[in-house]
Image (cartoon, rainbow, N blue to C red; front, side):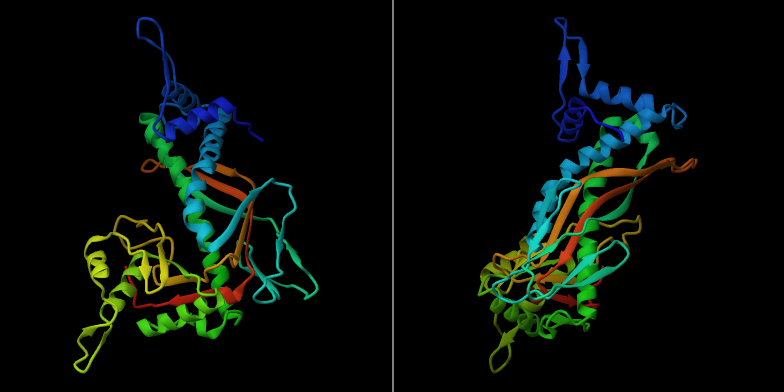
Length: 358
């Protein structure tokens, strides 16, 4: 177990938030600085030939990246994941229970991501709570050794940002997996599912209407790729009525301006739309990590259908160095314990529209 000094962690956080400090003597000469401390650690970890120079320093650097990323990931978790799930973080050995005594519908089953699939667990009617099950999940992140040596500040920032982003994307990917399994097992009401290419706006409104009723008229929330949201917005704009079928039904002046001006569309019909961060992952702009043709819909109101609990912090499961003349990258396998569970299957909707493409 590698322990990170509190002062070292604060230094790393300042580097990542562009608020580095330095101490000068009376002549203006730098005595100590955050940048200097990072350079010292990097030069201790790696040799000029991009080899591992000191194994302990190498592990300290990787641990510092992951520990700093743990802090950086929290705002993104709150921005996106908190909208579809009740998220909390507890100690590594804490016991966590979820309230399953929902006032709208009896919770009879929990669906939990395992990292390799989904576990279905029946919840007896007499039970009021269900235990969260901490399961080990892993994902990988790479960074460049040569860039870490030549430009340590920016590459350290990049590496920590990669880890923070990958954690959020990994959790989102597991939510999609759990939801798909719930659909396959017929645990979600059929009227709240659409899996045919080319969903119509009327069909979308049917799902929305069902979730509005469940949520007692609280606005539903939809999480999807921006391409999916834009596709629905275009369909909303082209809905027409009238004898000649040329009178816009939903195209208000506000929506017309939004379609022309706004980068993100934040509302479709009565539903709040939240776009996921889903950048290209290859040089040909042909791949992304999260699905672009799927949307998660959640009923509004106080109860979140998904429960997510982090048990402790992320850790470096392994940190191998690829000795490759072209890449020379560090491959970090990051491990952490988390429970990702769907409880209120009646409070979610799922749309898959294969006509939405990159």
